[in-house]
Length: 311
Image (cartoon, rainbow, N blue to C red):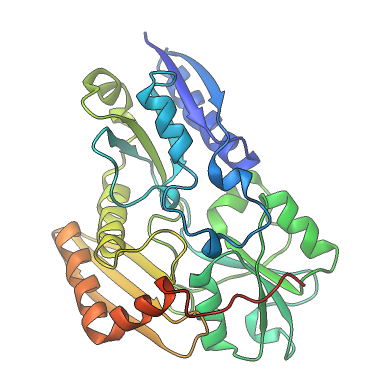
């Protein structure tokens, strides 16, 4: 039996995730305690994430706690973890994946196509914005920050006609009442790693790694490793207009990738399959870059776009 300290953000979803892992560890007979850590991303709540532009904005302070030996492991939404971890850390486990798709939430409308011209849609993600604008250039896209409850409350209050969220978070919290459409990946490619949890530890901590080994899901590790390799090849963090979605088909990984301009005027998609997840991700990323993805990303990184103001 071990005594394990978990570091987590304090949001409702982050705490659900941390308690979920705690319960699984306690079922193995371990003593577990939780330390809540406020991250940069939690402190900056009045600016669209894409404007903050900080890689690791939801992980930096938690990693500091790991280095200082205040916690033994950190539970993250995998999509929040930078694709290149500092040399001090490793991902000990990637959990079995929830539905990685995005969902359309609304009080009045049944789906994206049902929205009237000029409808106000809230999303914190340039990836979602770009794909929405490509499908419906008439929509008005507005930044949306806050925890899940805050976002749903703004929707119910009529601040937005619809909002786009990750299916996994709503499913975990049991807050699916306003989900009207699960958006197909062909319409909206998810973020790399969406729906999976990443358990981060100090590099070389073999004892903790061994204790966490039972949480590591082979299919989730293969698919998300491919997605994250694509994202890494494109040099992207979690707030750039890049999507990646991988599925296991037998022993083969099938990967779909996307790079899009935030205004939806240019959307590049590429699909391929292979048996080496990381090599596959790098190859799809390289193809997207060669097809014009590099030009799109240069504009994004150069802030050559404007996010609409909060309604």
